[in-house]
Length: 454
Ligand SMILES: *Cc1c(COP(=O)(O)O)cnc(C)c1O
Image (tube, rainbow, N blue to C red; front, side, top):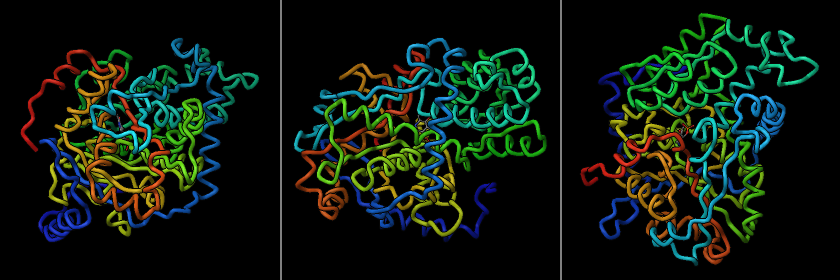
């Protein structure tokens, strides 16, 4: 277990080192027409032929099967899922006007958006990871206590199961969206549900949870403080299950289930993926669980033909730091002298998930940095071009296609991987990770906010 923040002065030289390392190992995307852009770090440890361990692959398949088993129950608990048979999935969208707005040239391939900002029930990519983590625990409980009647999962919405769940607690620490997904799921099953919120969490996310009967504990500290509180209570009580975002494989496997579906969607759009048709995917990154799950799924389904980039806020690049120093435990961004301040509440975490970094390290192509002003620009573009309603975190992925035109590091990556001639045949997927429940007032206030030039 990792905890605590910086250890004071003895970390000061390490801090300077980290700063230097970021500066040395990243290459700045050139600024064009006044648009401030982030940087790109290419991962030297990516193995082109990397294959994911059989145990991880089996676990992803098991997660997909579990979500199928629970689908009838999901449709019963959330009537809005009936049409989709109880499976929470999102569309893959063509976005030609966004491509125009980004100056994304057709000879670079096709540009698509994975619309997780439209996901039902949880409103973000956490719908897969968070809900899978809860269902995985519920399945264990149901087996131990013989709650399933004739193997029928809808019986878990019945009186007997509900009163059993009501004596148990599910809790989580969250900057917002993980709390929304886990809180919504656990409360719908009748668990006592506690969400520890960090100071970044938006008021409307708390209100929404309170409306579902979830207990919200507001912490004045950051995400790690919120996690520590939940972790402690979870450890003390055997009837208390704490979903640990900094170290949860069930979360990560849930996220990875998206890719089998994405494969079908790409085929429906006439997008081919193989060694001559590269697929670039850009995923907003917080602790790393969601993007590592995506990278894992991409590797299982497309092998080295998929090139996955994580995107982090410039003041909060915890996964970038962890990947640059993979031999020790993930460092805190505070030790690197960064503030962690960002409008992207979904990405505002100071320390990476160890298991996410371990899994992603041989798979991920690189980490891109973006900033609040750029996320705002991209949120506005997605809205004006195609009426997409993204929350700030969810727009981080658009730094990917923009970087493609401007970054020398990206040009080197493409040349080094022998992709220069192939890009025109390829496709780019920007993963829009959340936003469904964002209230109008919040959304438009973000679009109009004034940011200092960064
Ligand atoms: C949580 C979240 C992410 C990133 O997921 P991690 O597992 O924390 O890396 C990205 N976008 C949104 C909207 C999120 O809520």
